[in-house]
Length: 430
Image (cartoon, rainbow, N blue to C red; front, side, top):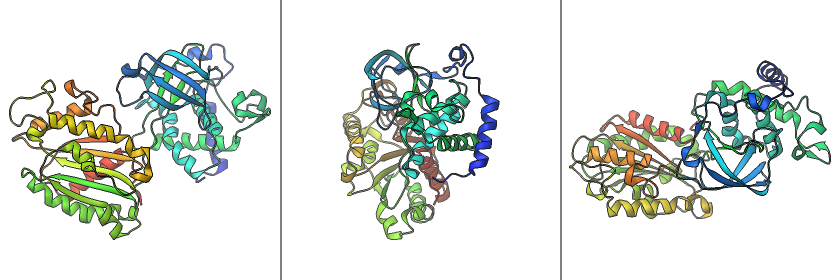
């Protein structure tokens, strides 16, 4: 594993941070004083769910969540889940837990250490195949204690017999204590200096007697590499003529310079995988669906630059809002796209291992421009007649960039594209 600090320094950092920040785990009433949910945002669409809990083989628990309404943070279905309070039990023999509330820890400073760890967990597992789910659970308990949302969990103090039974094998500790300390210390030494957006986990609040749990955010997409297909769609119906030339320059020069190292400096591979398509049908969601195509292999990123959709999706000139009847063209395209999304990851051998899309709404105060901007906002937020399944407010594969200047410089478009890719979770560092 590639850790940045020496073992001795990490142990010192860990000891100082722990001694200065954690409450004694044997204090009476500690669970009542920790205020685990203070400052967290209730996910109203998931405020009364049920979950079936089982012990996991590659996570502490495997849970099946039901009765969730559409939202971007937690969905119905099977998830990995991790304990937050190591001294509490959890019924986990396919037991049903009713009335479970879910909270978001995103943008919460107190939860930043744990959110940061969950954001790099997948990468740590790729770098160290011997990092077990038991090690990961021990790290989560360590950080929860540091954050003062759970009792202290210090593997440097706890004897084998004091560890929870699932972290023991034949009575002996089945975790790598040094690795737990090293990674915990790495997180505590780095999380405050992270300048990128850290996605938050979602926390399930069970009954008072049962363990509360955290479900990590979905893992970030793989890095852009030589097998990544990037499609840049441009609306060439005539109203964006001044944008097309700088977009071409951006793709062939600036974007190529930025991404070529990720394509192993192979210009042929880049030219074959990164394409600009000009279309005049103004069908945003058909373009996001790559017009029904399936690449022979590799992952998919679709970038759409568009300023209006006219009568295909919305009224071109007159007053129009989220309560107006959807067009048949919109209904068909959004339905096909939504049905296709899950297939992108269902079988990577038959297409893409991941899919991501960005809509760049290009500023246009004429014709259908204002209505198109409203349409994209309705789709993003699930407003009115554009709530799922006729919107994308419950999908996390997309990003939306509004009021892009028409006819800007190639450098400005490069900045917009790279910012959007990084916001989607891609690391563009060569």
